[in-house]
Picture 1 (cartoon, rainbow, N blue to C red):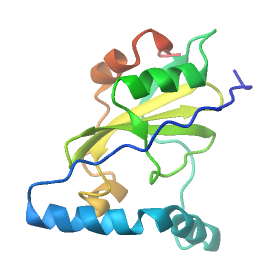
Picture 2: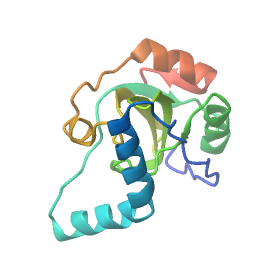
Picture 3: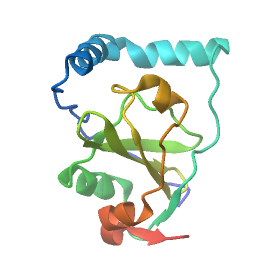
Length: 157
């Protein structure tokens, strides 16, 4: 599985426009800074102002033998997942996708070069940036992810 290669890029997830006034302010703020966010995050990591490494918890399993990352991503896209462009990049990660649960919540799934799949439910960074960064409310929701990945993942491997 070490030779997993990502060729497909699925579209970015589209955050729904929220109802509450303060959430609308946050929505507009993120729409404004998103084009620059990744470069800024990379710069802050490079100068050591922020640190990130390893892999987040909540392993689901591994991509099944004979399945490709590209086919899996296309499947995930058909089920409502989109590229999660503002997420941390964990060690060995080749894809990060999320399925939005309104403005405030998201199902976040990562695929790694070695075929490992990890996933968790959390607040969106757009709705609650500090809580998101501090991993407040992050939970495994394993059963929901197992249903979401269908026959693509060998569980617990």
